[in-house]
Image 1 (tube, rainbow, N blue to C red):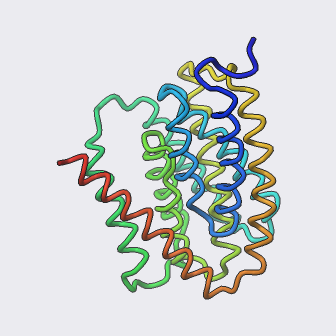
Image 2 (image 1 turned 60 degrees about the horizontal axis):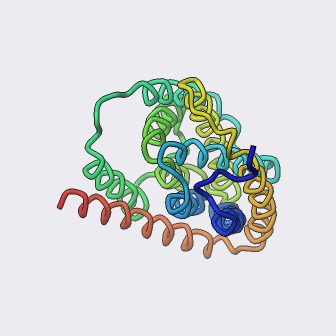
Length: 250
């Protein structure tokens, strides 16, 4: 068995491994941005058939490592309902056979993120079991098609939790749950990833190193700068979703 799949050369593998470190560091510091950035780079090197499953496993390991490192900041009460809702979303998404209007959905998600991020709304600190379950179901379902829906959860959590460590750590925990459910769903329908085992191992290792670097930056970051940085990242990602949606429609 070759160390790397035939369609991926040594240079491509090296780029993906380094990108895993950089994007994990970004996500550990601000809670998001890394997943979508990594997906964009992986798109250039990997076949579509394995792109989302591979990205999901790398992100599962990256977020799992972040939960371990940042465990004191996790809002654990959010996890059981998110797991329940996420399981339902993954089950529906894995069996969904109707073509989604992807462009229109991208525009809608982008507008939602901008609205939640910049329009003054009451803080969602009272978000209960049903709210977390619904968030888990919707975002996990969407992630089966788009690979990374952390901006939606980040926009909600930024309005739910006051402490930046809680925003980032809880986002890591629910994202890890989401990617675990996706991995189970993909394996259940027969996706085979063994040819990419060496690449996955290297990306997971560098991703954990990036988590350590990003967590150190988060601890030193002033809360005002964190909120501004988070809003900037959310705005960029939302506008890019809208741009892709508009061009898709045109």
